[in-house]
Length: 209
Image: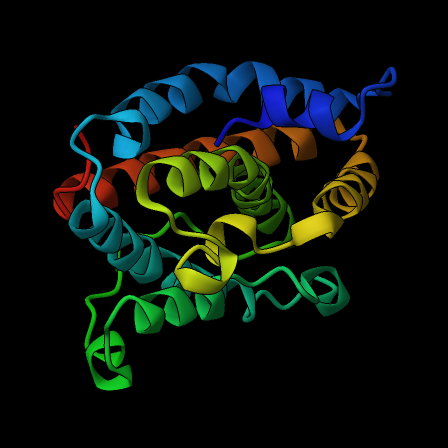
């Protein structure tokens, strides 16, 4: 979840930031930084066991959230094509020693942010797509510390590969279509609730510092 830094690397030219994107960046800066500091990726305690437990917790959140996203009736399903990541998490867990039965038995998050409309979905997607950008940075950390690469347990952190930039920019185009201030606020509130839900889930999973 390091959108601000990764975004510059992916598109070094001047970016045209929509109003809703700027509002999201401003509103989520504090919870984003708070959660980032609590994740153990840069901790000396990071080892394969800690990493595996992180992936288990991420799977429990992403699988449940993506299932809810698929049920949002007024969201164009084409906007979700290629954006789900739970399968990559399952792949990583298998590579790291989990059986399919163990993955299927993992606890899922039941305290998700509300997902009853397209606007709420966009707020959720902003957080998750931003986290995918951050994964580009985290994948390099995991490679350096644990010798884990995309084909050896790190597929989730580099899930879009070279398409990370285009995928982010296409989401921003989708986001920029919302001009109404009330609707923009609904997106922002959804993003904030997503951060809260995710952090609480990771706390419950005992993977935060």
